[in-house]
Amino acid sequence: AGRAVTTAASHNSVLRPLFRVRDTRGVRVDVAPIRPDGSLDYDAYEALLAEGADVVAVTHASNLTGDVYDVARMAAAAHEAGALFVLDAAQTAGAYPLDMAAIGADVVCFTGHKSLFGPQGTGGLCVAEGIEVPALLEGGSGTHSFDERHPSFMPERLEAGTLNAHGLAGLAAGIAYIEERGVARIAAEVRALVDRFEAGVRAIEGVRVYGGGEPAHCGIVTLNVGDVDSGAVADALAQDFGICTRAGAHCAPLMHRALGTEQQGAVRFSFSHLNTAAEVDQALEAVREIAADFLDDELFFLKKISIFTTRRFI
Image (cartoon, rainbow, N blue to C red):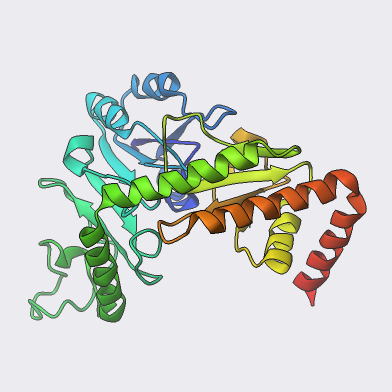
């Protein structure tokens, strides 16, 4: 039936397809653990591969902590085990240097709506030469119309129906901007903002920052304030300070389980090179005020939770 390996850092866009083929086709799915500090247990990952595998599908960087994993090492271990290596680059494409050949990835999957500055509903696959990817859908192709089956050549094999031309035009414009500015420059600018923010929030009493267990990092800092529900903190940031964050589970259930935040969730700040140091400082001041209010008076957050809950059900 086959065997697949992933890690607990994976997003549901990786986990759910794997669990579907587990349940419908009997594919064995094994998950390499993430340590409480957010780092990947590479020894455990490589031990799983000692049994052999057909495919390894992992994320380049956690969408919860921003930690970037050593995917070149992971790809080498996957190939040694006889597996194809599929890389989820949703968090890194456009924001972090990514060399498919240097990594040794057989397939790289990316979305357009994050650091590639494209519209939602865009993205793609980069498939190494010689790798066969079966069609998910069949239908109109605009070519070979008298053939009974969908064209088998790439990329038409994977492009049934009318393409999202408007969205892809937007994605192309975003990529052109990135190429003009340079990914390395963007990554350095983002890292400076992240370092400034992370150093500041780690110094705030009552705030816990997650991740940092890997040497490389992309534009995410995730935290909690005491034991306060993450939704309440995010609501206070939005309503009182005009700061947009993402709270909750982030479609990363196994990562939250590893970090011990299944019930509380976490508050994710996502930085772009378009942010400024002044905005980082404003965010730091907001977190500082929220944390101080919580530590001084728990009724403040009980009020916030009440407002948040009422708003959700109105």
